[in-house]
Amino acid sequence: MVESDIPAPDSLGNTIPPKTYVYAISDGGGAVKVGVANNVQRRLKELQTGHCRKLSTFCEIGFSSRVEAYSIECRAHRLLKGNLLEGEWFSIPPETAREAIGQAVADLRAEPRLEAERLKNMRAAYKPPLIVEATGREADEFTAFYIAEQVAPEKKEVVVIFDDRAIFVGRGANGMCIVNDVTRWYMQDAAA
Image (cartoon, one colour):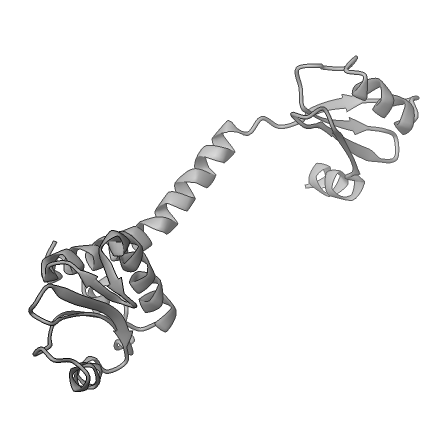
């Protein structure tokens, strides 16, 4: 992946000019620093002061948010951690740092899509609770009856509707039961 493969912030609909940059600086001898700076050229000069080799910037990508820039930097560091020298310096070719930054950008941008897909799959797999009318029975008596698995033993969730209230009863994998009064929620849903 090359820098041109990474979409510029403005091509993603971002109209705010970049404030923070993720950069990669090489010392030409196999050490590369991946970091974040507001002004990459100033950062290069600061690093050059204490370095014995000529440093050069070969990758800088702008972001309008410092949070996003630091997230990209952190992800790139994790991808490169096997080649860590010291601090934010890695023993890698410059292209490897550029690829790691590009991969970090791609991973971060894919996260919302992955989360949306995960939620969609969860909704598709969700089976609503069994609704049981329990007129004439007391809530405690029915709950005990359900806990003893005498009502729908294959169902993990049941909403029991009484004359004046609705009770949710759920059974966890460990056998523990959850009982919750859902009258307000159920009555609002039924009215809608």
